[in-house]
Image 1 (tube, helix red, strand yellow):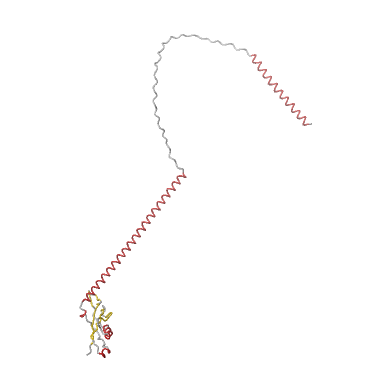
Image 2 (spheres, helix red, strand yellow):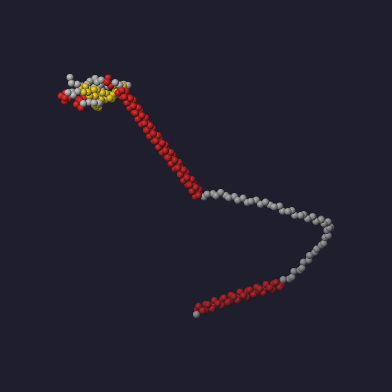
Length: 252
């Protein structure tokens, strides 16, 4: 119940305030309208004018009409478009620099490879030249050896062509007469051919021509005991091939 009384009291106060405000507005409007009716009307103002006459001036002849000039065509210049050079950003500049360095490294590597290949080819060519030179030297040495052998062969042939019968041993031993041949009364000759070494000894004796078989062995044994004065040609002892000696077997 106390709440209801408080609410009724509030509503009454609001109603009272509203009535007071409306009364004030109406009083203000009425007061303003009465003051406007009481103001006196203003007196009308008068304007005075005076007419002044000026001498008339001769009127100038109107200018002759001028024909409008034909419009001249205006050449329109072609617009020039200036494209500014792109300024590479720092990242792009670094990429370009890295690409340039990479190309430089590749070119240096290729140049180094070319130089190595050139050096390798020079080494191969030098080795081939040395091999060919060695072959040429060996061929020249073989030619010199062949020439020396040919000279010695000619010297030996010249010595053999000499009268070997005059090339007599300085020491020799007579062969033994075979007892079998004595018993049978066999006689004959046996020729033995051999080479005389630079030391004057007999080398490779062999029987040539017709020789009785009984005289072969004693003839070879006797020829092996022969000693000769070494044959010297151009200050050098040489082998004398084709020396022969004939053994005579006769019964006294």
